Length: 151
Image (cartoon, rainbow, N blue to C red; front, side, top):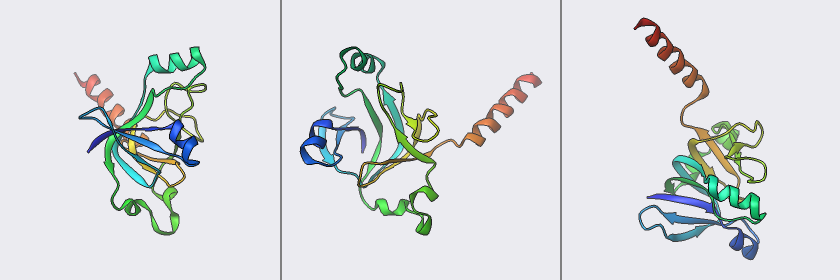
């Protein structure tokens, strides 16, 4: 099921733990709330520029950033890699702060993240695995430039 998932600050404060709202792409309505331990396949990290600008102007948060993709609640444990844990198969942890970044970024490197597979853990940590590895992008660029030079 295609959904948009965003951090629900109101419910997070209410419940005392990280709560995500799940909005259906079909109906554009919130269909459930999750507290982590789910997977989002073929995820896109979306930040509305107008929404972020409003946050910066008003200094008050609103729903303007979300992850869009295919929700999978059943069997998220299949994404764990034995003794290596999540970081054995994921590229990093994603984060977003409208006061610091204009997009979702890798928590450590601060590099932007746009498309990936995502696992959101029980404490709300957003683990991601890039759909298009960086070395693949470089190879594609080299092949494209070779093709251009041949014409």
